[in-house]
Every structure is written in structure tokens, then in C-alpha cells.
Amino acid sequence: MKRLRILLTAVAALAGILLSNAADPTATTYDAWQCQGSSMPYPVVTRVAVPDSLGLQAVMINHVGRHGARFLSSSRYTRAMSRALAKADSLGTITPRGREFRKLVDLIVAKTASRWGALDSLGMAEQRAIASRLFQAFPEVVKNARIHAIASYSPRAIASMDEFTHQLSRLDNHVEIYTSSGRQNSPLLRAFDLNDDYRDYIASDGWRKVYSDFADAALPLAPVSRLLGVAYPYEEGEAQDLAKVMYKIIAGCSAMSVDAGWERFLTLEEYNAMWSVENLHHYLTYSASTLSSAAPDMDSALLLDIIKTTDAFIAGESSTPIELRFGHAETLMPLLALMHVPGCYYMTNYFDTVGLHWRDFYVVPMASNIQLILFKDAKGEYFVRLDLNEVPVPIIPGRSSLYVPWKTAREYFNRCLPLIDQL
Image (cartoon, rainbow, N blue to C red):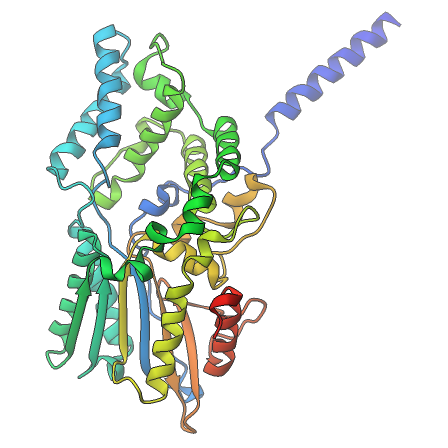
């Protein structure tokens, strides 16, 4: 009997070890480039040509884009990390790895030169490249076109608009370009600043508890300890805050054309875990979820604008075949969720699965955009194609067709709107 008890104990212990080492089915295994999340530079793309067999000619383009790659949005990340590293240095707990990270922080500060949040040279190139590919794909729309472009009041959004439109004018100096930037465009491009229902949701505790519970369980703190030393005296919540700051700094480097050398500071598993926390924050605050529809609903005016400008062009009430809008990740995430764009809309009560299905690096990399391209066939019928980051995606969930009659697409988009806003 004694031997049996010993055997059972050994089996139970082995089972416990195996269970503890079992892979978490909700853990992600993305590569380091993807783990940059919404700070990831714009992906390399090849525009998809319209099959000749369809007999379609492009006649109008509706574009909504995020600003291009930028310097870190604020100095608060580098300041917070610099303070902690300086404290660790003064206390004698800082590690050699911590000194390396301090050099990285100093490099970022020097390279930024107080241009926090400004569009950088990579971001400018991203916008010019998107504009060039648009011209190459649809020269019949761009040449001699009247172009209307708007941007939010943010300097990086304005600079993105300028780079994009300037490139179009270089490719065809016969275009007429009318631009507008400022707070008058906030209802379309910065609804997150104005919408009362959304602001009430953000102020509520529901999503915060989901996020904090997930962060408590998923956010690795060991990377911070490897910088500051095991004897560093953390204040309450400081280790978690610094882990989030550390992620922001590392993930933001490529957008600034800085080599972070992330392998010196993180394992890929830790990078994935840090990303998953930031990704969930984006999902809960700017996409559709089972907690609230306030985020997507606040972009109803933007979707309505896309519908109405398309209608006006078809009806001959508008002579503007190119409508450009330049905003933010916070502009696009709600819009894409409102439209139920594949990969940009995910509903679940199991929030630890979000990272497997809704990924900010796919939804809103730097310079992310959607383009609704209007086509006309030989019979005078209109069709549309929706491109996410210049890659065609199905417009209507459950259907694979990429070219949809405008009437059908319009009915679908209208149903996406809150009842009070439907046409």
C-alpha cells in the first residue's frame, strides 16, 4: 500500500509538471516584426490588377488612411524609463543589460530631437509609395482628376496628406487638388474626441477590469528586472507600468528607422506576451466587442460620408473622383469594425483569445488605409471593391466575391450603421 501511495504521488507530480509546461492555447507565436503591433511600418504590397474578363473600368476612389510612420508619440515613455534606469544606477542595482537599454533610450531621444509624434522620413515615403501605386493601378481615375483631401488637425496627419497629394501632383501636374485640415474635420476623423457615448464607455470600469485582469496575468515583468536588477525597489504598480513602457519603446523603433536589437532585452515569447496586452487594449477601446458597440458606432458619420460621396458621383452631382481622408489608427479601427471587414471584427466573451483573431498589426500598421474603388462596366452598371492596405478583401461577410454591385454593397453598408443613422 505504501508503494502504491508513492507511485500515485509520483504520477500526480509528473502530471502537474506536464500540465504546467503545456502550451497555452491562447498564447500567440507571431514574429518580432508583427509584435510591433500598430507601430509596425507599412507592409510590402503588390497591387492586385482588375481581371480583364470583368470588363470593369475604375471611375472613383474613396480613401481613408492613417498617418505614416512617426517618432514616438510622446516623450513620456523615454522619460519614465530614463528615470527608472537612473534610479537603478544610483542605487547600484542596474545591470549591464540595463545600461544597454539606457543607450537605446538616449539614442531615441537624440534622433527624435523633440519631434515627438511627428511624421518621419519613413512615414513620408510610405505615403508617397501608396499614392504612386494608386496612380499606377488606376491612372484613368487620377489623370486630370479633381481631388478632395482632408486631414485631422494633427501635424502628422496633415503631413501625410501633403506627401500623398504632392506625389499625385508630381505624377500628373494636371490634377486639381483641394485640401482641408483642422478641427472642422474632427466629426469624421476624430470622433473619439467628440462622441459622448464613446467617452462614457471609455470612462466606465467594465473594459478596464477586463484589461487589467488580462495584463496582470499575461504581462511579463522579468524583462524589466533584467534591466533594473533584482534588488530594485519598485513602487506599487511600477514594474507593470515599466513593462508597458519597455514594449512601447522597443516596438516603436522600426517606425523611426532605429535598430532596437530587441533580442538583447526580450525573448520572442515575452515580446508576444507584451504585444498581446497592448493589442487587447486597442481592441477594447477602439473596436467592436461584447462589452459595447460605442467605438464602431461613433464612426457612422465617416461611413455615411463614404456612401454619400459615392452616391453623389454616380448621380453626377459630384465631379470629384478621388476623396482622400487622413486620420489616425483610432479613426480606422472603429470604421473597420463598423464595416465588419475580415480580420477587423471579432466578437467574444473569451478575451484571452483576442490576439488569435484580432491583430492590430494587421488592422492598423503605420499608414494603414482602406480604399473603396468604384468601377463601371460596359452596360453602365456600377461595382465596388474594398482594399485593406491595398489588398482586396470581401465586402460582405460570408461571401467571397471581391467585386460587388454598388447597390448591394450600399445596402450592406447601410445596415452596418446604427438604426438612427441609416439612410
